[in-house]
Amino acid sequence: MSIQFVAGKLEGEARTTVIQEVQSQLQEAAIGAIRPLLTEFCEAEVSVKLGREKRTPRRVSTEVREIDWCCGHCGCRDANQFTRDGHYRRALETGWGHIEGLQVPRLACQRCGHDVICSYTILEKYQRFWLDVDQRVLFSSGLCQSLRQVSQEWSAVLESSVGLRTINERINQIEPLLRQARSAPITEVPAVVQFDGIWLRVQTQTDAIKLDKRGRKRHKRKGKKVVLLVALGFWTDGSGNREILDWQIADSESKAAWDTLVHRLWERGVRPETGLQAVIRDGSGELGDAIAWVYGATVVEQRCIFHKLRNVADKSREELKGEANKETRKQLLEQASAIYQAENAAAARTRLAAFAQTWQAPAPKTVVTLTRDFEQTIAYYALDGLARELIRTTSLLERTNRELRRKFRQVCSFGSPKGAEVAIYLQVKRLNARWVKKTWWETSLSLYFEFLSLNP
Image (cartoon, rainbow, N blue to C red; front, top):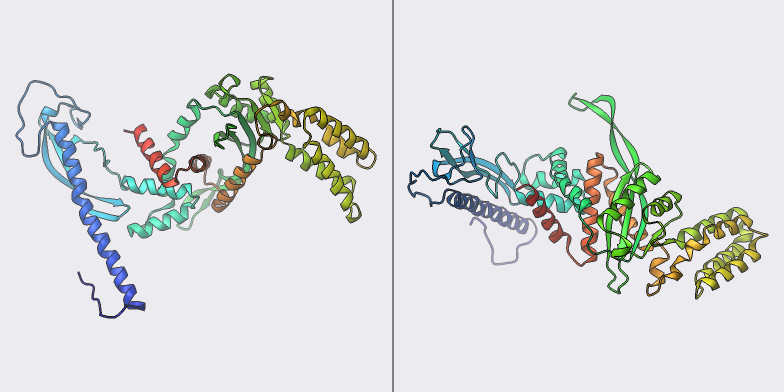
């Protein structure tokens, strides 16, 4: 070890030099230990495939021992026809750094003399990055680090350029998991589902051409706003459990877009007979039509009273303008809010009638706004055993949307619809994991192994 210590305490530049030297030697030691380990694991897999240890002579046999590796020339899969043929050297990028001169076992086919295509469990041919890099890139993306930030981090770790496209490919490769998740049955159905939308911006490719810094032709991109439709389920059994059940990216909050999401929930098992009791929504008529088309009158449909009262507040500012009416507007809103504090639905209707009588003359449009679809805002009274504070607003989903907006604001915009889909999927997985007290590191690791199982 080339580090020089002194009797006194090291400070300043001397201390920095020692720490940097220790870090450098630790990295060298790690890479030096990893290189033979990877070779040893590959050798062990070869021994299992061939059915004999290294340096054990091949037995000539007429019996066929078929394996999943095959000769690249004649297509033979008989392990009895394969022999070890030394090693080839390759490089590999890992979370510990760049590994040069990694020895990978080779096999030869005795039937035709050509190389055998070996698909190792821990190592793919032509694979630049090892598994830990992909997993850690997913982890960073789930925390909403931008592609540029992740690229800079791994360029520094590997001491070589890692481009944005490379990072994007590492993240987007898990898209099959997204498609699988959207078709998987929902076995634990919540009592209540909340629906709402959140607006995002994605980059779309146009037909116009521009030259980049290197003079290459590239399609121009432009930003496009899209809406993320979200369905959040929560359980009213006292556990406080909640989960984003499904979501959909659409151009607008149209009935067709909501139909797609709501119908998919039905197909996946979110039905009254499996435990669903109520759906909560804002005042969107398109969403209401979609819910009516899929569920009809089989579930209680509750309109969010927060959205209703916000509309009342907006109307009152139009009719009771100015600083002089500030106190009047405050009284109006207090009386409107008090309607939803009634003991039962009948009492709420009585309070509404009193409100209408009081404010019909000074604020007629405000009264119309409050009375419109009023019965849907007091549907929660029909649900026994459910906490009213949880089922009369979309507050839980609004808080979730605020967190999604905060995270997505760090990204600014997504490079493609596919990138947006995968980024949202990672955020959904991260939030769902946090609500069940799991760390994102543990969840992202499980997510990557789940992806590997789809591509054995």
